[in-house]
Image 1 (cartoon, one colour):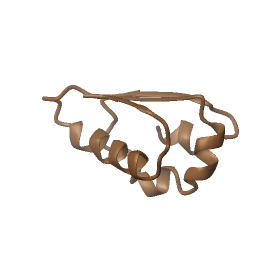
Image 2 (image 1 turned 90 degrees about the vertical axis):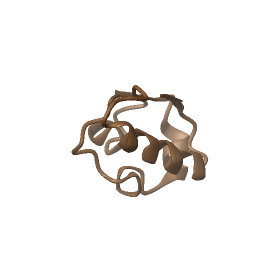
Image 3 (image 1 turned 180 degrees about the horizontal axis):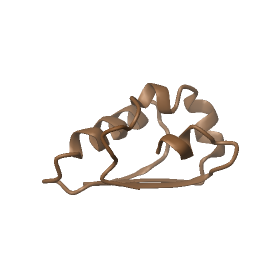
Length: 75
């Protein structure tokens, strides 16, 4: 997530499962949602409902939902 979303000029297909604890806050990952909407082909976020990292994935999902950045979120 950090590398892909931080380099949208190079990555259009991004997926994360059980995103790591060192993931940046959503506002820092995608500071320009309009750019992300234009450049992303697929953004896939998944995490098990009982995974201790699920709060990180949910936080990212909520931010992208609020900013209308298309993505798939499975939990």
